[in-house]
Length: 203
Image (tube, rainbow, N blue to C red; front, side):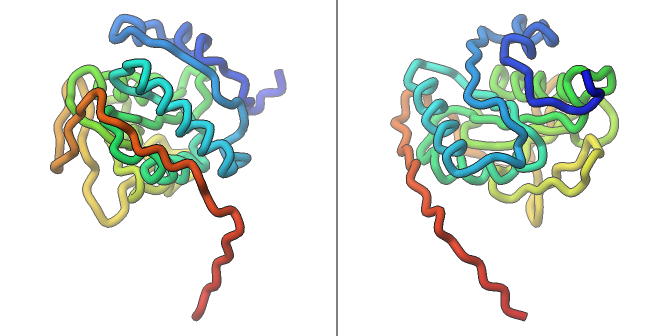
């Protein structure tokens, strides 16, 4: 209505926009929160971690979390610590351009995450975003060693001081050793977080 970005998409609407996803997997969707990613707090990390644990217990083969890009890498890092011993892939995806725009990068990021879950035995928390400015490939990036390095480029997310885990095109090419999926593995869910934290910088 205003031309600006709104955090109003429901999971069902995303599936309607990208019906190809339904042909790839049996997808069950649920809404956890509908907020801008800059408004994320520890309580939201806790909600996501608990929801992942619940879906894992229900037998999910993998989980895709759609997330705003501004703090997506913070959430991925938090979940990597909170979801100990996770036996399935938990992949965070975002879009540098809103899903309702023709130039959106959301489709490739979502489909690539679904393809990774469908075709590989990867397990753990990771980020799946565009490799470059084209719509040809995505990279699977480590949860705790990746950052958003640009405000609007499709390839804004990069791994820092390490290689990406994999490249996803029609196929998946792994660049490093990864933990193999083991469905039914008991998650060590760690949801407690200390909020009273100070940071002192010394120069």
